[in-house]
Length: 342
Image 1 (cartoon, rainbow, N blue to C red):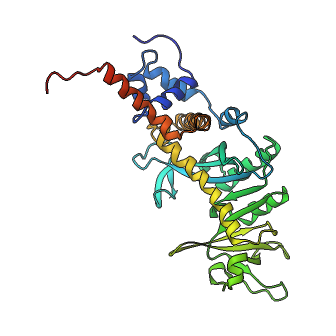
Image 2: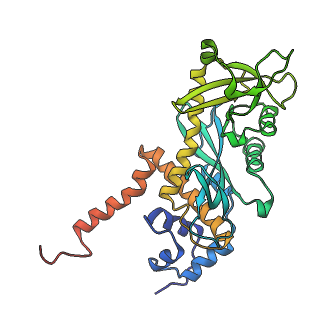
Image 3: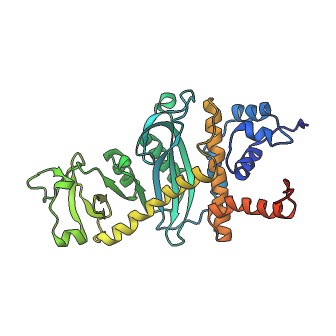
C-alpha cells in the first residue's frame, strides 16, 4: 500500500545510488512501498534542481591549492533512441566519435595536484534553443563564478580544443590565470620575432631537436600584436600529435607540459563514472524539466560516491557494485528463490 508521504530529492538520489540497471520513474515506483509513479513524476516535474546544489554539496569537501587546476569540458548524455525528449538535440559526441542525438552537459571540476584529488564544482545544460548560450558562454560563466562567487584558489585552466578560442583565452589571462590547451592543427601561428609576419598551420611547422624538448615561442593569428605564447608538440601515438599552447611563458619543458595536460583526463573520468554508476543517461522522460532534475540528482550521487571513495580508499565502482556483493551474501544466507533439487 502506498503511504501518503511525499517523495523528496533525497529519496530520488537514494534510488539512483541503489538501483543497478534500471533508473526510470516506473522502476522506482514498482519497487517503492512509499511512493506512487504520479508522486515521483510530480516531484521531478515541479521541483527546480539547479547546478548550485552540486556546489552546496562539495564546497566543504574541497581542499584548495595555490597550484590548483580548473578544468572545463563537455559530454553528451546519449538519447539516440528517442526523438521526443525536449532537451535532446543532434551534436558531436566524443565518446561515440560521431554526431548523435543527446543532451549536452558542460562540466567544471577542481583539481588539487598535490593530493591527486578532484571535485565537481559546477555544470551547465547545453540548450541553446532555450537560453541562447554556447558551450563557451557556459564555460566563461562558470569560470567567472569560480573566481568571483566561489572564491576558489587555483593557478591554471585546462580545457579541450573546443574552448581554445581567442576570446576565452584572453579572458582567462585578464583574470590573472594561466592556461594549457590543445589547438586545432590548422591554427595559424607565426614563430618569427614579429619583424616579418608569416602565418602557417601548427602542423606545418618544422621542429628542431631543441624545440621538440623545450617548445616554441609563437604568436597566434588574431591575438593582440606582440602577444606571445609557448607552443609544444606532444606526440601521443604514431597517428596522433597534439599541439598545446600556454600563456605560461616560464614553461620550457615539453615533458612538464605533458604532465600538466594529462591532468585534464580527470574530467573524462568524471564523465565515464557518472554515466556508469548514476544512470545519468538512463532517464526516459520526455519533459525537459524532469531531464534537468534527473541530471542534477545524478551529479549529486556522483559527488557522494566520490566523497566515499576518498574516505574509504575505494573506487566509485567498488562502492556502487559492492551493493551487489552485499545482496549475494544475503541471498546465500536466506535465499528468496530456493532450489528444490539438483
